[in-house]
Length: 142
Image (cartoon, rainbow, N blue to C red; front, side, top):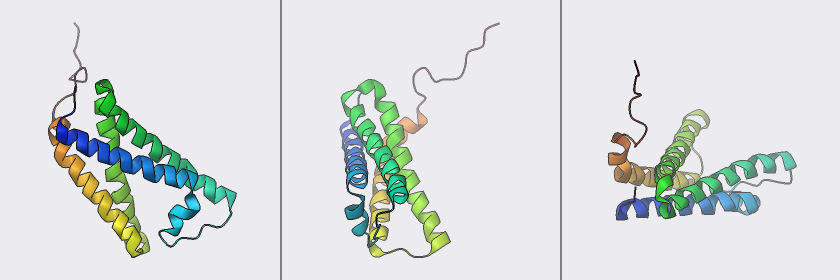
């Protein structure tokens, strides 16, 4: 299955954002979180707990981008984009309810994540309702 032009744009944007942010968290967590007004300090446990999901986010970004080059994994790339960019805003909204209003930069990140989620949902909506090849209802043998 090949991606349409709009799917390529959406998946490319989602993949680049996830890869860049994930790599920034992985390799420069102090600088990344300072941009949100968060000072991390030198706690190795905390830094490890931040770097690990940063690596995961970068990995998902690579997977999203790989789907543009390898049509066979395009459905997995689309699922990764939808999962990442729906889960992040949901987590932020839970935090908003549970913890109160975050800084403007965190709200800005929420807005970007919601925009990418909306773009992905709009562009991939037809694929979401079309059964994937080989994943249709199980056949019974008698």
